[in-house]
Image: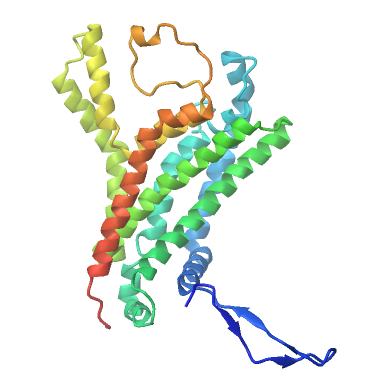
Length: 341
């Protein structure tokens, strides 16, 4: 039976023409029924409302900072900036982070909050065995939880991004160009991908651990380690290998190259590199360049296609990490023995 089955009910008499007509009704696929139920549970929860309020406040604060410092920033850099609108997402005065930095900081919390109790809460309540006893495929459950949370994240981030853009248009009276809009759209897609990685990581812990508190603490511990402690450990290790007292150009380049390699495994670093290149078209490289590589280069903005080529390794890394976490959680869930309590 196909997904969109057309049910034909008994013919009913047409009072005007005396004939018969066939009433058609479409049935929804069970997977999308489960996705709708998960989305409704997310939207009605206090957790979602609090996260939405937190992100909205951060969005308004970053927008206020950007609009307050937009004029001085443009005068200091370029009076005829061709990508004026993109600065709404990157400009900051130091007192409050920009919209891009806010998403980098709060995005992992959003992903962890929507996925840390996806499976173990169902098992603790005893509803997991009831759902799996229904005539549906087993992987519908974990797939629907991921798809529902991903739709919620996408709608939330795109709504906040369009809110910033709309208020910026009303205040400045300018309209973004097609190049700026496409760069903004690519930036939001990368943001959804970045939050999806943390969602899959928390989903992995929800399959692995039976207690929701344990899975939540595991996700937050990894986020805190990558945000604070990993950078300190890497800097100490690199300084131990290459002492900073030796200031020759070759040693300094080796120091930067080694530091960049170790930092490139951080999801937040991959996201920061990708979004910085997309929102700042003048960024032509993400690593240290020699004088030979800089010779003859023209300091002009890159087209969107060239910027995507620059950040393609970062995007590939984020996609691979996301698929890896989801694949492991999918495998563990499919092999788990579920019994009724």
